Length: 337
Ligand code: AHM
Ligand code: MG
Image (cartoon, rainbow, N blue to C red):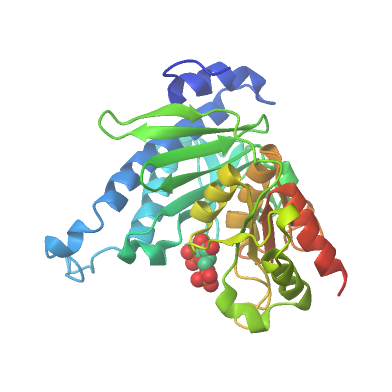
């Protein structure tokens, strides 16, 4: 239940009992992400100042190039999780391979792995458009006490115990689920505290926004082309034509669509024959959140969360948002199966 001025810290403690496993580790883990997100938020927010203060492209005293923000975010999240000794492994969109992490006393006895895209949509930073961090948490499958294995990361999305995103937007929000609905917290930058601002987030039953990079239209599968034509058709009783909105920053496009009702699509294209988005770092966490908010996520034919990953950086076509809209897109896709 929503309480006035409830902070994220209070919310995590209060809801800990609803977790499937109640050792408190998952709460500590989410707390670490909250902390790293504040630090990254601070950096993202002053990105525009870098040019003014004359640092861009310069080398620092060690002769290193100015760090790019996505690299910074990657290091910040990984370091925070390592320092707190609460995960046994991390896989990141920024790294080729997963990282094995030892817990206290150098033992491999931690139970959770984290997969993340530390700064998604980072090409938008230069033009002051919102970017985001996406994270996904699983229980390891390999026995506690041993180093993590690749199969701990290659679990289908339906095994996630938590997932969330941080949106560095006009305000900074952390939105996450542990499988009991979706809650959104807004950062008060003056005091560095996240407050519960969006309890129990739900996609509206119907939506009228479609989000896709239409520049790739000629390369889309015929089912997607047909669905786009459906979205654009003039049918007053059905609220069509729909509105087209595409930021090119998944977290922002998803967030808007969850609040207003809409569908996000990244199908196969000539440049991205498997789709562009990564199953493990982007699609699975967003799919888990979508389903928990009454929405749906599909690769055009099947549920994203049921796909068995075969490699860390696997890509997949992505259709995600208001359930009725994803169903309709799937109908069009099925015509050309
Ligand atoms: P990134 O992980 O390299 O930042 O790419 C992911 C981003 C998504 O946030 C966004 O929806 C999509 O790429 C935009 O791609 P495009 O510019 O091809 O439309
Ligand atoms: Mg990304």
